[in-house]
Length: 221
Image (cartoon, rainbow, N blue to C red; front, side):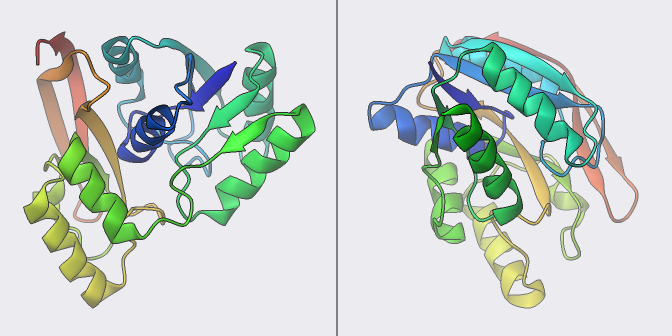
């Protein structure tokens, strides 16, 4: 079975899009739901709404709980892959050696072929692809230089230019591989419907901010 690790963010969605275009469309999306907000491996903001995104794509979806403890969370991932008979695994890794090495190791152990369509992609190129093909929001920020105005902003040309400007000044990773920010995809070419956010709230402590989806539904495109 071809599966994809799916967080609902721009990277995993773009990886699914690119793999599907090359003939490797996943028949299963696996979302690791971490109870640790500082998980080393897994995205956390708005994770429960991945079920809506999966419905929009028409792909079977499972949510697998993990306590998110460093290294132990890998055992949870291993169990999720084994339990779902995964033979090929699509991931959205771009530059994180920490994540890729651990996923590749588990895949090798289980005889799974790892597929990372974004690996080594230029950060600016990836961001521009997202802005062109998707409607995606920045849902969390946690880096010097990113202020409250970025919370809940759409990743469009204006946002890309602002991020590139901050990269020059503060050396941030504009693909957010250093944990600078998180994202959530509302619409993409593979979506038969779009995700419509019906209520939300924003938190901001001066350093870390989050766009929290309180309710959402699928709507016609």
